[in-house]
Length: 321
Ligand code: SIN
Ligand code: FE
Image (tube, rainbow, N blue to C red; front, side, top):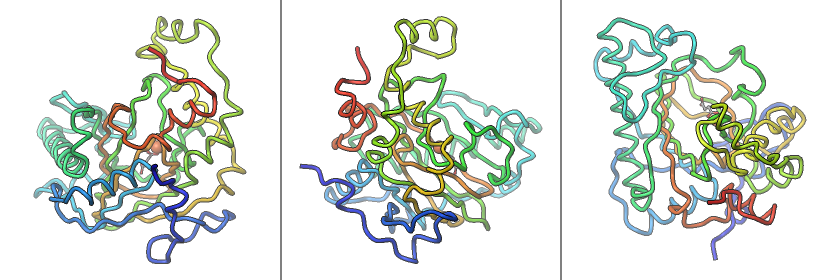
């Protein structure tokens, strides 16, 4: 019987959890699980790996305070928002591309950016495969990004405002139940990356799923035909998007939901299922990020996985076929 996350929640300690957002209830939990590893391919015994996987799947943030991603000489110059092309906030590398997107610079700069971001993709993959070897056959490398702009004070619409608590969901890229696993690294040498992390997914779902709607007949097919979505949207994607939007639109929820603020220090790394962990990025200047799509087949404990929670609440599978 898998242990529930709630039963493993520990009281937060001043060492890990800092002040909560103004007005929010004091955090009754601490989802941050510090890990001692200093290598990107640590050799762990089977019991340790199983424990990490259980925590990750229950919705914890695996935090590696001393897992540093080093710049090669000259790469520090990329710690500057001027390398963004102004249209996209991130500089992105798609898994099979040989060049970055969303960047501006000379030919050599763009090549160097590619080398930097590709190296992060390779290090992250070593880490994930070392910690969770069972995920390997079920995992697809998706985008890698460098995010070299300060988060705080960015003018964005409420829906794109990642300083509001949310779970990740994409309007045009239906996941069909594939999980979103992300490896983050604070590459800024001085400023922490400040996140808020909210209540467990099951509690969040209890509050907002009753406010979500199903699709109208033919909707998924029409959206696919009009290229609004890249493939046919499932009910899972439809409900997850609404959960994302309902949470971001609700300022009362943002202020009062049980949450903790956490400062990821310079040179630290963390791993989360970002479709499950309610998160908001409040401040920070430069981050690297790797996304993986993970088949739900890889998950050993479905108790807290979003598709399973929604299916239980609505009484049917959210992805058909
Ligand atoms: C997010 O995934 O919401 C943003 C994370 C970050 O930029 O730190
Ligand atoms: Fe997010």
